[in-house]
Length: 372
Image (cartoon, rainbow, N blue to C red; front, side, top):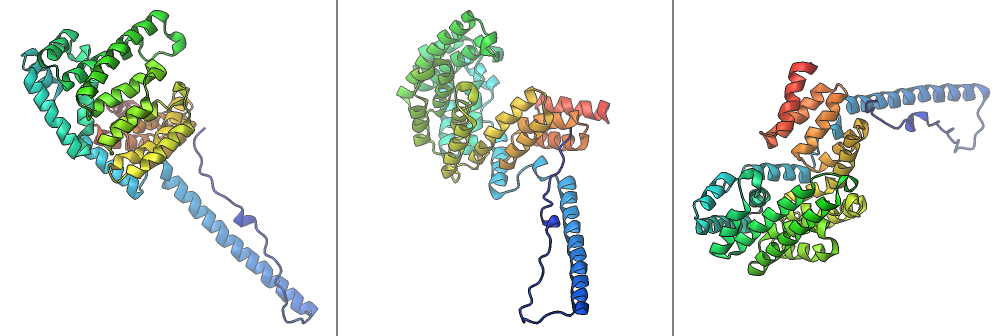
């Protein structure tokens, strides 16, 4: 079943009321007939106008899909521009950091990441580059525990503890993976908790040395989904906002802990997003938080292959700005419904913001070669 435009026909069904005779005169039969004819002609004319208006509205909904595209409010446009700017930034590559550590130049690693930290404190648009660096410190990218231990021993710096804590956090996530709790063994849960405790220890040590390291706040908030009430995520969030009022990344990690699967609710997500609006002048990207509840509803619908619902929810979410994976999954559903042109529009926009995202490239290639 494809989405159908909906409009109200209530106005078209209204009946004209008889006009009152305010002069007090009585109408003769001929006058009465003339009045009835005039009223009938007027009904026909008004009905035709209303019918034409309804047809125009229907055509607008069909050919200018509105919520099947993206939002165009000033706030949504500002979010898109801020997101685009953040994607253009890269302070240092993982390969460069790895080469510094492998050569034993831990001092330079501290200094260069410290400079990135200072840049983020001055310009929040660099935050993605900062957080992504720590989010990718894992075995898959060549960062070993032995290497990170050497960094900590050599410098005893806040950044080295943040790096090792981020490594442990990634390892804790990998220990369980993305499986449902019912599909996760007791040993996998225990392994995850053991690694999570080590991550918490290092991340707290990093913040004791430097309380402005917002990636440490973000990692601890994520770890609250593993450690539960042992981590006061509300206090950690408040501490992060105190040092970086415009932080989007920390707020994003916090709002994900409010999802229903973590015993939160969509209402809690919406309330938090509304509260964050007060800081919009600090970072236009915060506007996108208002779409997170709908995004989660869309993802659930996509998972159960309910493309009608998924398109509605992703379209609602995209009224608050752009995130490339939201566009990818809506495009997936549009393609399943045979709406290839609309799907290609979403994929083209997705690739503008993330040129190398493989999901969009694969789906675009499939539509180009097999579907049309």
